[in-house]
Length: 235
Image (cartoon, rainbow, N blue to C red; front, side, top):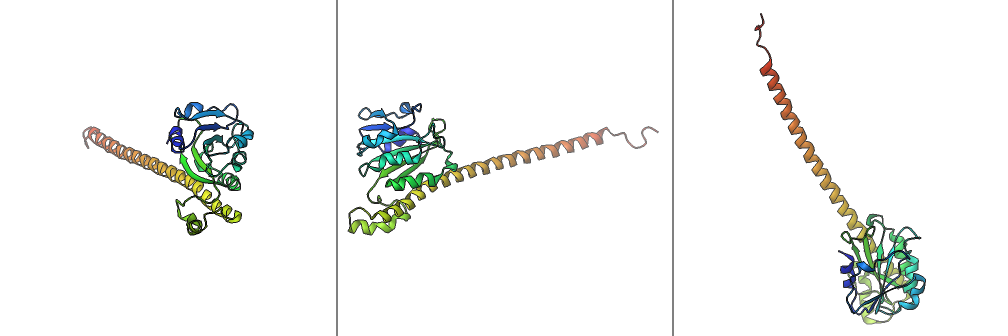
């Protein structure tokens, strides 16, 4: 999936995309936003005052180099005070199979943000960006999309109020780690399949080489036999 396709999935009700990436990182040309959605840049330190409602979507590039990439704690601080339903699209500069799940999950839980999507961007066309993680500020866990949050369904139906803080943190940590770990696992499995296919191709080449070598050895033996003088011919 490409970045414009990821954004399109999460633009319902959004009127402005707020890019909080570091200075020098310009992804605006990659957004392909519709005409009714505007775009602005904003330092991540100022984003908490700007991205407060679901009609603004935060976007930022996270990664291992603090001088170039945002850190998860900075984005979490920007979203912590936002209204429930406010979302962020976090672009990741780590290789997916090296994603530091704990460095992302912890700050998001502290900011009461749930990971609602984790999408590899293998065809993103953005050098160094491997995936997009979509987070949403919540007061209680979102409807379950997997078995890890099923425990809260009955309680939410009977008591539609914010979850107790400890319970919310626990469920969010489970849900977030499940999403992020799933992203990593899919990447590792895909890489394993690629390696297995490479091994099989190499095995086929080796088999073909061995068969050709055996054929040449037989031909050499035939030529040697045909060229050998008959016994006693020189006597």
